[in-house]
Length: 281
Image 1 (cartoon, rainbow, N blue to C red):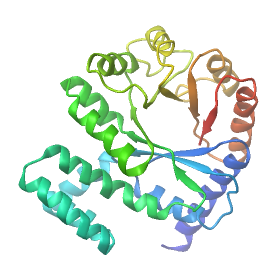
Image 2: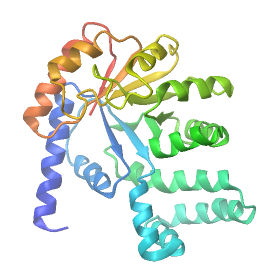
Image 3: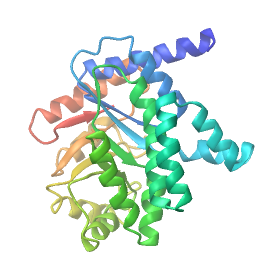
Image 4: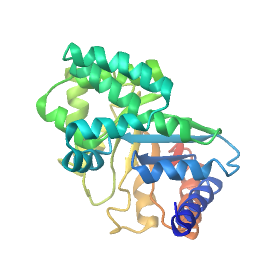
């Protein structure tokens, strides 16, 4: 890592630290290699109170690019080379048996272990993996295929092996909720979905997404896209979110220390009124 990269990581870590001190209780991130370095940079900082992590996997773009560059075998070798010896031995056994049996769901579980392992090893001591989220590309694809097996496998594996809440990112909350109910699947999971006053990314409509909230008392709802891609002001976004029931977490992106202070100070005031319980970074 050169000096410029180190400075960038330090600056990003400072923004996250500022967000944390301003009221954010966690960090939501994709399993992009940069976020692995950010977690390592955060280890050098005293975050104080517990810091909750909400990883979203897989980072699909990276695997597509590596597969194009190195082929499927090269992709597997690249991932495998980054694992510690003990993890390699376990995955060779578990993943090997799954491959021999052509067990797609077994291979999926092995993949989860590979993907999460590096981030768990890199996290600060005060950080806790609170919720593990399945990327919307996979979630919504499985919805389209009406296949509940991957959902069941993901939920069970995350709960049993990571003692964390399993969750799903989706851009179609009503369809996901309906599918979970019709399939008899557990609703005691987390769901991250867009919520904003203009219905940006809220499919099929803002009204239908809002209507879902009243039936999801046991589900941890994580609101994202609250600024509608920058169209809404923070004041307008908070005004809208404060009127919604059942939101457990609000995920907000920030770009500077000043932005972090303003965003999470305002969101903290909103949570103190008794509506939302947690703020995500």
